[in-house]
Image 1 (cartoon, rainbow, N blue to C red):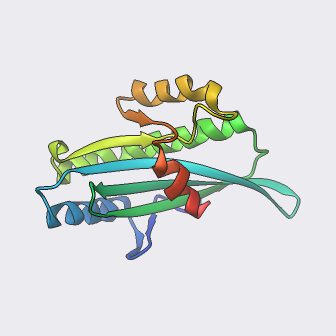
Image 2 (cartoon, rainbow, N blue to C red; image 1 turned 60 degrees about the vertical axis):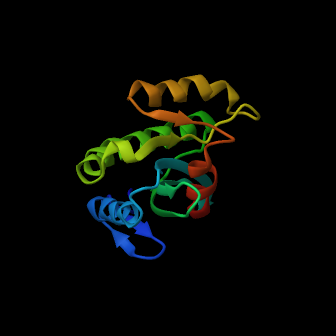
Length: 166
């Protein structure tokens, strides 16, 4: 059961369609077109029980970072009723980031020259802890879809921005 119906939330602009979020990114880039930008998508999840039912909140964040000079971000949340299994959660987070990227990249390219930004997908896995065995698999999923993947400690889009809203 999706909460977002494709809609993003902006801390400053409220609810936005994917096109409106891309328009906001374009406006941000056009304020200082001589700078370089990073557009990042990252997802995170948090499991909990609601009335005895296992539920996982998945949040996908879309961030535009003006190198050294601020950022804007947007996020959307989806709740899924299922038992939390780490491997499933990481795969679902990665898949949500990928499907968001596939939805947004054509919109971004229509508004902003790809020469003005790097596009990255941040995955909440790292060399320490229980996710280390999954790094190659999920990085391979992202790269296999033609995107640059970042993992911990460089995956702040997932581990800090999306995490704020899980």
